[in-house]
Length: 180
Image (cartoon, rainbow, N blue to C red; front, side):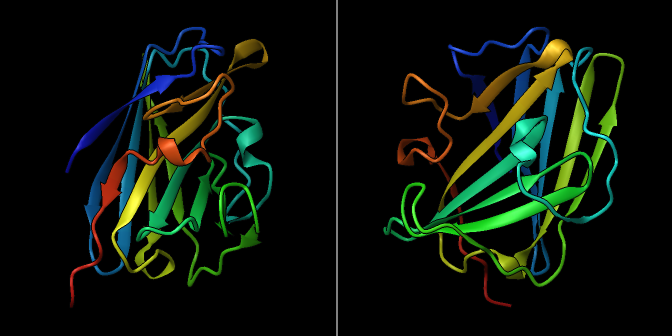
């Protein structure tokens, strides 16, 4: 599986976080597993444990995100995954338009582990809740550090302000599921 190096938006540099990599850890008939590795995480703000469940506004603090745009259309979906174990999933008809809560067959699993100078965030998203076609993919995260400093990390940044919804940010690919 490929590892993707995320870049902070130049208008919002991090304090101590020096590198973030995201990777697809595995895909099978039940789960899509992702991992983000945060280097220089000494000042990382980790949301308090809240237990599994949907929640809005997760991106207002440390949050990890996956965007998938199936086929060649404008519609896409967004998955917000929090170290608090809260999550949400949305469908969009086009860039930031027509937002609706995405139905999910079961809840994603989210865990964070912290080392002395790094943190690892793992997420598993139910495969049945993902699009069934090949998708353009964006892997992103919002990182909050001590003092409220936020940095916005993505595969690419295409505007003066951070915008993970920008179609130009969907630079990776997720293959369609293999037939069982």
